[in-house]
Image 1: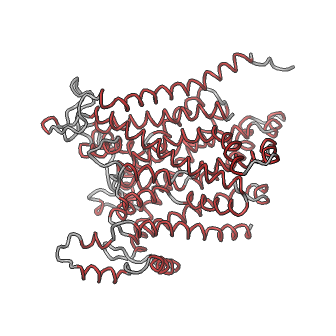
Image 2 (image 1 turned 45 degrees about the horizontal axis):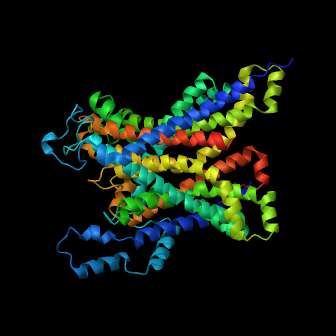
Image 3 (image 1 turned 30 degrees about the vertical axis):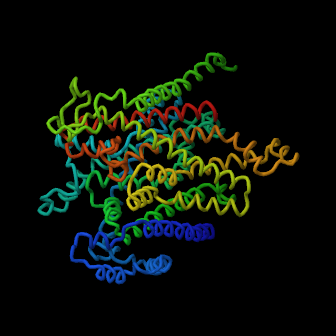
Length: 327
Length: 281
């Protein structure tokens, strides 16, 4: 197992380098430099000042040198400073990361908590009323733009009915609240974005849970369990679900990029100051160091998610460890 | 004691009906949409770009079925023209993805060995990339226009097709008709083009149909974020973006483009799922 993990960890390195080279190349080759945003609105900025600025930031060096400089820094977990406010990127990210993580973990827990029971109930009677009803729901969930649901939620639940706050993470008077009050306030702000992310994410996972469960319930050992007279509840949960959960673990790892993408959109719609919003703002301002840092962190999280899923799968199912997985 | 088997003909017929209902429903919706999109210049009730400030933010009425936007433009006309943009971007972006994915998958699967491992490593890299990052970054830096959007969506969504084609090719390669073709001396290109490619069209077609829905969703997100189709050209995403200023006041501006996106994407997904059940099961 240890050897397997180490091999997988090592194989992440070329992938990561590939990703950072692509992103770096895209950013550096595209027209528009961070200095443009810094200096365009300053009529006093002379050509010489511009050049001095570029030199100071190392922007006048050949692109591969810039990349290697960047890579050397990142190897020591130093993502340099933001072009906009000069603060260290790490500091900004550390400030934003917990917000995004909280939202995603909440959504993920809800998705799992709902998708698995939904899938199991649907799988018990494939083609039954419940199965067909959830299928319709899943198709709609797949096809709905999440940001549009967000807008509808803001317009209806937020503005028209006034049930939930429509933007940000804290109320204006959050400073004066107690710790518990502030937590409740934040939770209140997150109801809508987390709810929508859950609904949209539910579609794929419940479908997956269903087909995995249907597959398992067809196996011989389920028939054996039924034949020896076990109560249906035990057959379903002890023999069925435990085996059906395995593939679900894998899909969880693979769904991380979707969650990251969802954060960018949801945080922009709801003006939540998390990593997604940070990325959007950084792209718009050509803040290259922040963009690179977030791309790298996103890729690392994605790869680790995949690795974790595969490792969990391998730990639970000895057949995987032997063969090489490359479907 | 065997249970009585279900009447076979009824079963098969019922199943075929169920499947084709999906195909028919999805196909009809898309056909209607395509007709509206193509005929937009003739059937749209107003010029989608005609600004009329006195008529700003009118609710739906007999004169303006879906109301007007903050600049007094007719929303129905803008939605009709938006259908053109969404369909064209969706289809061409997927076309780009299918061409790249099929080529990569064919070569990786058929040539195998080193080439295969390098290409699959590239696929892994692209899949590990949260594609929204690449989309936003590339489009923000390249200046957003329809062509860039189509190409970039295509460039970030070909990996699924590549994996699919590769897997198909790997299993086809061992089949006897490929062996026979090789035995009579057909060149690698000829085998790939004449024997392998025709046999992967069905799964690719299904993946492409499902992919168009995804591409349309991506376009709407980009346009909503202001990085997609640029105003004044109407697209469903940027109508939503413009409706944001009147959120909670002009509900028709937020509701209608979203319904259009939902129905279109749903239709592509139904059609794709129906085709999958028909051809791949």
